[in-house]
Amino acid sequence: MDWVRGESVGRGTFATVHLVIPKATSNYTIFPSPTAVKTSEVSTSYSLKNEKHVLDRLGSCQQIVSCFGDDYTFENGREYYNLFLEFASAGTLVDQVKFHGGRIPEQNIRGYTRSIVEGLNHIHSNGFVHCDIKLQNILVFHDGEIKIADFGLAKKSGEEQSRLECRGTPMYMSPESVIDGEHESPADIWALGCAMVEMMMGKPAWNLEKDSSMCSLLLRIGSGEESPMIPEDLSKEGKDFVEKCFIKDPRKRWTAEMLLNHPFIEEVKKNVNEASPRDHFDFIDWVSSVADLTPSSPEHEESCQWSFDSYSCSAADRIRQLVTVEVSVSWLESDSWISVR
Image (tube, rainbow, N blue to C red; front, side):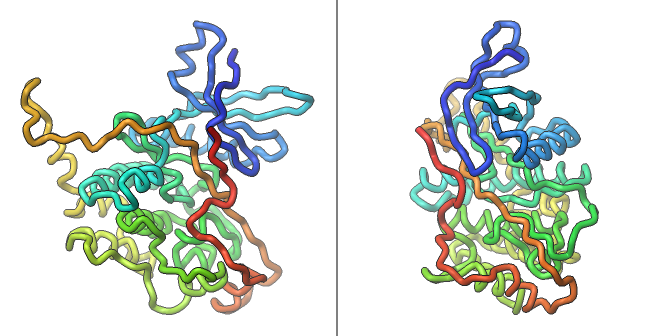
């Protein structure tokens, strides 16, 4: 494929993101405009290659970012792996929270949630788990359409793994992920609930003190009966939906397929169809919820995979092992991704 790197739109610890500029007209069929390329040195490209592997097997889905292929390049004496993906000009749902002044209107949340659940249903029904659902990984396109992205930590459902393996972002981790290292489809649903609360409140679902440590957060998630906060001003249907996501027992937590029939999002498509104008002048009650947004760089938090010496430990001991040093953490900022303009 003949292409050159365009504008830089983001970078992380091991990967950078640029716009793609095709060099030959014949390649335009390969690179829809605009296209982004995620690049990593071959030696640190495992997550990018995993993302390509998973996206290829998931196939086409309107609620999942499209992959247009990959290649290798040799630049400045180093070999790089490149993954070509759809570029979302309106950024992520984090940008939507900021655009709406810190609180996305509930009607918008219904639509966003519907799309995320449809995407998760496709992922889970095809035998995969995303493992890192969060606002930073939900892309927003110029027409308001949203898609799930960043499958670097995704895995096959039921795949054997260490009990002490940790995937994802701590703020969105489910109790079974913290206690047992269990990363299956119910963990994605728990993370969805956390994302919904964050869309409504403009802050994480777990109410943390300024000097809270990762250890204290994981203890709260994995031990005791406490659950993430649910906004008081959320509708009755919305509260019930989130509660279904926050059921402690993963075997009783609602699945994506079940959530598609929940009243909070069941009527979204029907309402959209009813609101569609019948002619050029039928816009009396219609107001666009999509604004022209400045393109935003993808925000990404590098998720850790911790390993430990002992497999036989209590839940409390396991959580203490997850973090060995108590340090103050800013839970509202990404640790790895830096916006570039």
